[in-house]
Length: 469
Length: 158
Image 1 (cartoon, helix red, strand yellow):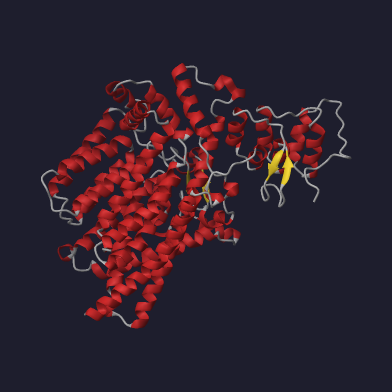
Image 2 (cartoon, chains in turn yellow, red; image 1 turned 180 degrees about the vertical axis):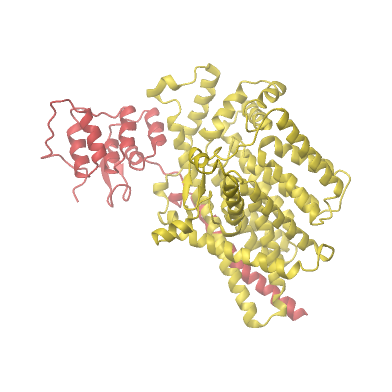
């Protein structure tokens, strides 16, 4: 069997059960039901598009509603349940992410397979990946952005072609139309161009920049602002603050808090700490009892980040002209992680760092492969130590990756039970008065009620200590 | 050169083995779940009292809407409220688990808290030290209601 085929088979074997865990999560009440209800009220594209730009004063996500409308139509045309259609799209996006990751890292040799077996669990196991899988608006826009971002990297590794600027702009336009984090596609394009990746020409970078400029102008013209401090709750030190508390505490002098968030966003990728702005280490210091999940996450991230630092120090000293293709990919990936952290200025959220998480795994792959390549030049003891380090690191990441199933099943239970509050028989006054809205709400609720999920009480209790933060 | 290549490839495969093994175990668990061999990975068929014991309100809703009697006693598997297996009503299971919101939810969905069931539930809540549930049940009682817990039967005897 050839190395790329083995890598593909391993990825498939690991991803398909994960797809099952993702598919079991029902449509969410929060973030999803409202968009679905709105989408049902429009029968054609343009009225919904023009109205949707006025739905919020802080978000500009016209394709969020259009996609929802298309999926509702798909369910009607095929006779499938709404839950099946929406969750199938979710699964498809996850499969696309894995496929694009495989294309981006280019497994060709056996040594690549070894590096892949460290990087792939890191891709799945990093906290930003599971946070991304848990999102749904009701389509998973963070996963869509991730797909577009990885697609740009894959293009950047090819020989430049005349249509690349068009494809990059199309990916950017799509990503920006679903969620503000879509700007990460532009960041990826610029980072690839700056790193000198062959497929990302100056024309592609300029076209993408012009498109982003047009997007920002459009937001300005539509008087859509960005949420500032207090738009969302976030942590500081060992405490999580509500939006009101944040505004009260940092609203007058926000610069320190912004710097904290940006640094914290990057640290969360590199060390798995802080999470949502809160340092569990601080809490563990106070209580004197660190949670096992904290130690596992910290150890795996520290080891992998140390490898990445080693790679940067040993391989990037020669300047851009001397860089290999791997060096350029590594530099682009690291740059994406750093810029991604800046998006956390107002508050830290794992989903915001989800693109950075994908590129963390890419950078880890490059670093691990480089370390393995040094083994023939090293002595037996050093080689054995490297092997032990990688086995321990990969084992920890694989343990984290296995926990994604556990977290997703927990999420399925919680999401299903959120529907208990919808159309409560004892609160008929809260029911929608619009018959169309009532009908779709009732249909989705009935689908969710019939959807069976595992109760956490039947899951192993030790899983809470090792996988749930 | 050839020696180095062989050594490198062998090491690569050895390093690959650990994470692959981990992930294959996780994958095997999920596949076993599909085949019904791993109860914690498959949707368990809960009885109504079990759903009450684990605070699975939507499962309660599903069963009640499917015609299940919310007052009927059924088995509760070991480990859900206590180590043993017991037969109890959904309300008893909710009290045994100390879940006031589940008691209220069951009541809203047809579980009876009346002169027949109230003394037992109230005494049971007190024995369980479920003060919030006891206080809630006391509110349901008529003003002249006097609790006598002597002779009230617990769902378990151990």
